Length: 180
Image (cartoon, rainbow, N blue to C red):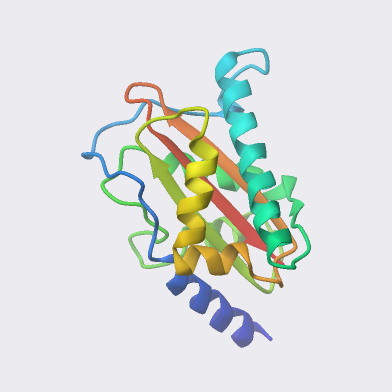
């Protein structure tokens, strides 16, 4: 079972490794913020939480349009998704792996003792945030075969989406964490 799980993780990790970058900006130190860093009354908190929820809704709409059940919100993985989104800001390219070649999100799931047999991650980033950002991100993810595969994986039943912004550049990043 563990070998199957590792093989499946490897398969989906390889598929997800073709990370989506809506724009690639020069490497710089980011003044990052995710919703966990803001007060619920702050506009930035509201914007990030609304973006996260909107992307969940769009993901489930795509699943429904393809005859699949919706994924349920996974509050347990939300801190991981937000951390992964923040890590994508200001970097040269989106990255699923650490310096040892290990999948970061899988390591974080293990450290949090969150079980799964199959897990996946989609990463996306855009240079600006606007009213249509989540729609544009979901469309780009659905046009990428590897990201589409995660969105439409019938064995995924839970997901969380984290959003983070670079307060200096306005760049926004998203991380979708899926598990069975």
